[in-house]
Amino acid sequence: MLKPSSSTISWVVFAGAALLLSLLLQDLYLRSVLNLIAISALLAVSLRFVMLMGELNFAIAAFVGIGAYTAGYLSTAMDIPFWVAIPIAGIVTGIVSAAFGAVTLRAKGPYFLLIGFAFTEAIRVTYSKVPALGGTSGMVGIFPPLVMDPWMPFLVMATVVVLLVVFFIMERSDFGRVLFAIREKEEVARSVGINTFVYKIVTIAFASFAAGIAGGLHAFVNNVISPGDFSYLMAAFALAYVKVGGEDHFAGPILGAIFLVSLSAYALGFGGDEHFIYGGAIVLVVLLMPKGAVGAVARMRLRKTDVKGGANAALEQ
Amino acid sequence: MQPSSNDALLRVNGLSKRFEGLLAVDNLDFEVRPGEIFGMIGPNGAGKSTTFNLISGFIPWTTGKVQICGKTMRRGKPLVASDAGLVRTFQHGSFVGGISVRDNLRLGTIVRKKTAERDAAVVEVARRLGLSEHLDETTSNLPHGLQRRVSMAIAIAAQPRLLCLDEPLTGLNDTEVATVLTVLDDYRKTQGRAILLVEHNMKAVMRICDRIPVLHHGAHLATGSPEDIRGNKAVIEAYLGESHAA
Image 1 (cartoon, each protein chain N blue to C red):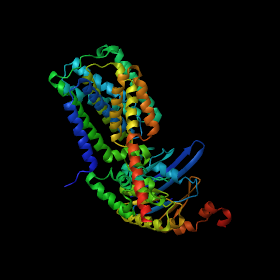
Image 2 (cartoon, each protein chain N blue to C red; image 1 turned 135 degrees about the horizontal axis):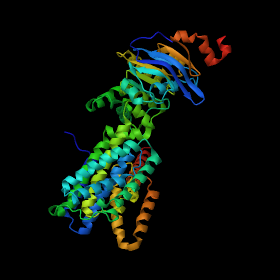
Image 3 (cartoon, chains in turn brown, blue; image 1 turned 90 degrees about the vertical axis):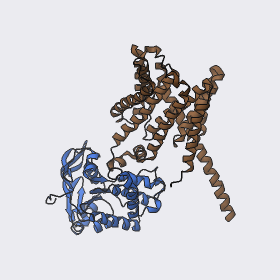
C-alpha cells in the first residue's frame, strides 16, 4: 500500500482543523471572518491557477460578481434553493469565462490584464444599470434556508476544501505541466501537438467556475450584494494574498489569505487607521519576502541545511 | 529536385517566404521519404530554419504547398502539422527550464499516449538518450549538452512519423554526438519514419544523412548523397568562396 507523504498528512490535518473550527466557532463575528478567509483563499488559489500559465486574470472580480448575482437572482427572484443556486452560479460563470477567454486569450501579459480590468469595471457598471439586479443598491435578502444557517461556516469551508483539492490535483497532473510549459515556452507544447489554446480556455473556465462558486457563497453568507463589492479592488486583494503568501507554492495564496484577512479583521479595531496597517503590511512583506511567506520559509530551511552541511564538511576536514 | 514518390512523409512544392523586402525562402521543392535522414545544410542565413518554421506551421508561407503524410497543410497552423505526424525542435532549446527532465519528457507523451502508458514511455526515451539518471533534476540546472538531449527526447517521446531537428548537435561533445547519432539511426529504421535535420556539424551530417539538400540565399542549390555533395563545386563555392571551388 502507498504510504502518504508528510505533506499529504499536513494538508489533511490542516483541512480537518479548518473544518472542525468551522463547526466549533459560535461567535458571529469570528464565524463571518472564517467565511471570509475561506472565500478569499479560494479566490487567491483561483487567481494563482491562471498565473500558472503566465496570465494575471484581473477579470476574476467580474467572475465572482457574476456568480454572486446569479446565485442572488436565482434565490430572490426565482426562489431556487440554495444548493441548486450555488452550482448554477459556478456553471454560468464558467461558461461566461470560457467565452471571455476564447475572445481575449489571444492577448498576453499586460494586454490580457488590461482587458480583464476593463471587463471587471464594465460588468460592475452593468449591475448598477439593471433594475432587475437592484441597480446601484444591489440585491438584498439572499438567505440560505433557515435550517442551514448554523451550518453555513462548515458548508462554506467544506466547499472551499473540495475545490482546493481539485485545484491541487490539476496542478500536480499533466494538465499542470502543460500550464508551466505555456508560461515558460509555449512553442514547446505546441510543437508536440498540445492544443495550448484549449488548455488556456479550460484553465480560465475552471478557475472562474470556482470564482463563481465563491461569489455565490459570498452572496448567501452576506445576504446582501452590491456592485461595489466586485470592483477591480477584489482582484488586487486576491493578488496581494498570492504575493504575500508566495506564488511558487500551492499553500502560498492560502496562507496569504489567512494572514491578510485576519490582519484586516484585527485592524478594524483601529478605526480609520486600518488601511495604513493593512497597506503597510503588504508593502513590508513584499519588500522583505519577495517570494512570499512560503518562499521565506523555504529559504530559511535551505540556509539551515547549508549551515549543517558546512559544519559537517568542516568536521570531516 | 528528385522524382516524386507516392509514400513521401513530407512533400513541399513551390514553397516561398517573403519578409517584406527579403525573399528568405525561394520556391523550394523537396520531399522526405520513409526510412531516410534528410539533412538540410547551407551557410548562415540560407533559409534553413525559416523552412523549418514554414513546414511545421510556426510561420505562414507566402506561396507554396506542403503535404505531411499525404495531408495538405494550412499555412501557420502548427497543430495541423503535428496532428499529421510532424514534430520539431527549435534551434535555441526546446525544453521548459523550470521543471524536471521527467516532466519535460512527459510533455512529449501527452497527445499520443494514454495516462497509464506515459511513465513507461518517459523512462524508455530517457534510457535511449542517456538521461535516466537526470530524470528528477531541474532542466535549467543541466549542462548544455544534456539540455540539447532533453529537447530531442521531448520530440522523440511524441513518436512523430517525421522528426524535424533544428541543429540538435550544437554544443555536444564527441561522445554525446555519437549517442545522438545512434538514437537517430535507430529512429529512422523504425517502420515508416524519417528525420529532417538542419545541422552545421558537417562530419556528422556526412556520416548519417542519406540525402542532403543544400540551400543558399533561400533557394535550392543542390541535392544528393553525402559523396555527391562533398564534391559539388557549387556547394563548395557557396560555403568557401570561388577560390576553393576552382
